[in-house]
Image 1: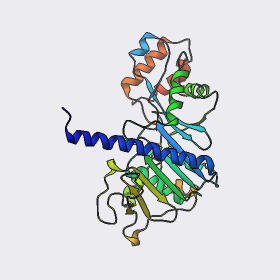
Image 2: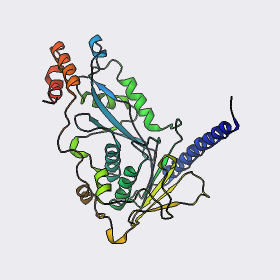
Image 3: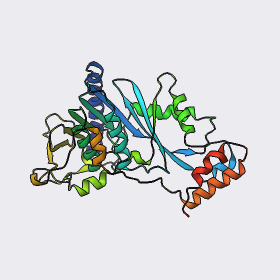
Image 4: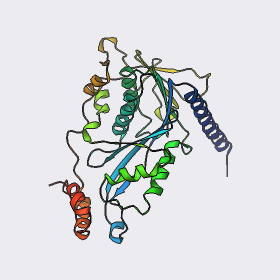
Length: 326
């Protein structure tokens, strides 16, 4: 039985879904007409299992995980795939924010405002660590303003998802033995509008969590003393030469911005370098070396190498399989 409370929740859910889509439509039109404005959607694709070949044994074997964070620029109509495998990094907020920071650092100096749309995954996109990464990015690039906006849960229709769908189609019939084989699949998926592939190794990922903790960055309480409800946040904004982070719980123009002072104690200001090169130095590397593979997964990979001894599998994948714990 549907209660009155359930009906109100459903109405709010639908309203939030429609307002997010309307917000994206407005930003899209602005990106098309204003060269200083860029609107992107980004999302992490489902795990790309490696190897991916037509063999019965493979179905029951543990496989190497390959990750693809796709960014799509609405203004340029270009897609960018940041690709790495589990021997190089994991797939948490530090990894996602590193990819987004890399994208922002490559924008033309003429781009002054970026608005980012994503789903509301708390572990990867909607959290204090991603927000601080954006705060650093706006201070250390030609950008003036960065907005991060979130779709309603379950209703994140994004252009980057179309790229993921094309990759799924392109992999049909493809023989994928090693992580780099996915690069060809991704290239083939964008025949009408090619995507740019950015292969990443462990040294590319930055430890934003340690930065937040060591610098005592305030990302929990507003200037009015209210605790931030991250799961409700719909819009985050950071601006150059400002020690404040702004956010809203809706896209309503009448809602006032909530303000977070990043440096509540002015005597302990965050060191915000002035160039992108210095920024990478201010954030320590998340990983100092490649990551080992789980021993059981490594055994399965080695077994596949032994069975497919006439393919590329033993020559290339075995190098990865040998990275199992001693």
